[in-house]
Length: 344
Image (tube, rainbow, N blue to C red):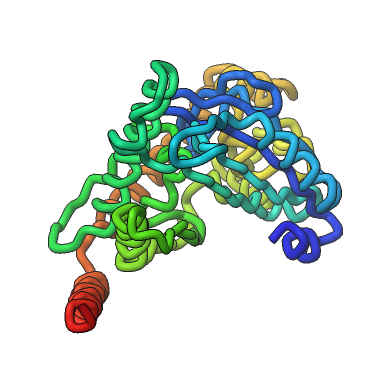
């Protein structure tokens, strides 16, 4: 995957990587060991406060950094596995555009999450665990139950409104866009299951396949139409035009958006104090007027967010495709069981 990814990078694109470990409600950076706080920003993006980001110039550099990071992941020998993972590992890959012209036009980062889940453990699997391993197993199972609830509610049909509790765990919050019914950018999810041919592990394998089946039958994530009235999506030219129109030419776009790569999102991210400072730098307007313009900008941001929220809520509807696939899957399972019984 890494070789293919680097082969597809453009001349002005860079790849950055972040390596995380999630255990229960705790998240840490694998390379620095620092705690990471997972949250949502006022711009509805996921923030990983405290996480380090590493620029990997080549595929070999990425693999070297990845292997070093994952070597710090918690593992321990158990009755089931000599190197049992004691946490969930997450690799965040960000493809970043460095061309200021493209950034000004609204080109955003491409993001990929690679998640390796720790396996759930039953009572029999924890028979020889010490106190620390028992505590870890409890946290692992708790986060996996939250993930299960998110998958179940995301794939549920027959209800006009469905709540997906992805905020209950850092693991599912990081993967928020996978569980949303509608997003502002295209989202894809690929799920790989580990199954075992051993009869003793049949129940584990079936549970894993049920997870995958639920994701397969879930309604597809809708991509919302870009809101032309949302300042966060404006290009450099559109943002400058708005500043000129709203102030009747008294605001200096060069003071508020001085860099070639600045756009509407850059303008929206300015704090009120910084916006006022830049707006009054030329002396053409006073502090009160500058504050009024900032209020108008953020009124547009808030209105756009309200429209987006309504659109997302409207996307939470049942689909016939999910029900049909579920019936097909259940019938196939019943036919398989009948064939096995006949052989016995």
